[in-house]
Length: 596
Ligand SMILES: C[C@H](O)[C@@H](O)[C@@H](O)C(=O)CO
Ligand SMILES: [Mn+2]
Image (tube, rainbow, N blue to C red; front, side, top):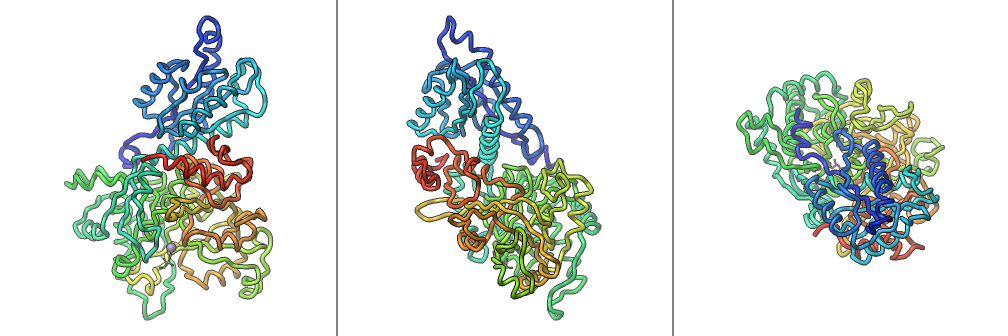
């Protein structure tokens, strides 16, 4: 119930479609009206068939009431879009139109223009003209121009145009979805991790987001005063008892806690999970129970749990709450995952949000912990790495916040995958739970106990690892590494895993190498990584991340995405075309963040 009536109570941004036209009457405009509007309808159909909101509903498009031949109709469309809560715009045309008179000038709306590639009524000439106006006015727009010439009157959308329309719309929707939402810090800076120093200027200016903060004592208050839904707690606890199997205690015997203490910890971590979710999105049940203020929540689309150390030195750790909220299901059934960063690493939390809004799937949060060279693996295990892992691999592991979807127990075309919640079967939910053990937390690290999520990600999943960094004087910078999860022979995994904490979830990851820059070797990827954490998304989504980053004016300092898939606003090319990476930095700096 909380899902659709409360969590997504604001609704979702829509895609505004702007058919522009040559304004000359008595012949020209009249002959183009039908074709132009048909192009707009075709784009709307494509996008609403292919794209979905995080709750699974199809993306909605709003088409301007009339074709736009001049400023009056441009203003009428802008007005309609405002009322309809449009969050991005796509201008389409098969013909010449008047650039500055017809363009979308709202500085905060991501924009693209598709200029039909035909010769009779040159849409592509308009495209070039209007994109020069966008550059000149500092309102970057994406240009879409099909490679092959189409005949006049053809309202089909060629495959290359479709790909660009979808990439832009997916990224633009992600940008619009996070706008005006909040990041909730549950606690503050964890163990001196810089990513958990929440930089509110970054959130405000680059993401259009707000920051909310609570002290961790709010958990104590809600636990002690019983500020959660007791009926849901009973349901959750019964489900946990039945489905979450406790694994062996790995602590030295003298540190192992009693059964009684562990039972109390289970009760506490389940309550903490309800509390964290209610803090993020609110819960109408709390109002019925007399907690009207708490019922409202913090409007958070992402959050972070500090935990370490003040909380975990005394109370059960946040691994269970982070894992369950980050997964695509809980005791209420399947639902879209919540984005909860461990150690309140807000920058990794935003990396998770990017991956999630682009794919509608859960995200793995992990320490980028160890680069294992082929020689080191052989020395320690006697095994010679082969196949994808032949050049070495990265051990991704954290104390337990990783999503259960990261087990790789969902299937797509018979292969391990991570899917949007509406595509996940009940059997797959069961398999994810069966593949996971909840191990009593390492008490030397977590004096207050709790349970860490222990699983091993299945191999052969295409994955993308990303990291957002903040650099003083430069601002935010994104890193992207596409690659695959791999499986090691059992004894090799066991030996390597036992060198760290075997109670934590492991993903063995190999980035795709390009023999270039940071992707010359697996070691170079590790050696260039900007921080201790990374977020890992299912699929090769690097191209979408690059497009998203360019809309937000966040430069990408390393990526291994094939050149032909990189899609940025047209003005980026005016900063240089030989070295796209350098041009990206200068373009982002020149245009500055999307919001002020
Ligand atoms: C338990 C430890 O403090 C870990 O949580 C720590 O190594 C980290 O995850 C650091 O990012
Ligand atoms: Mn960590």
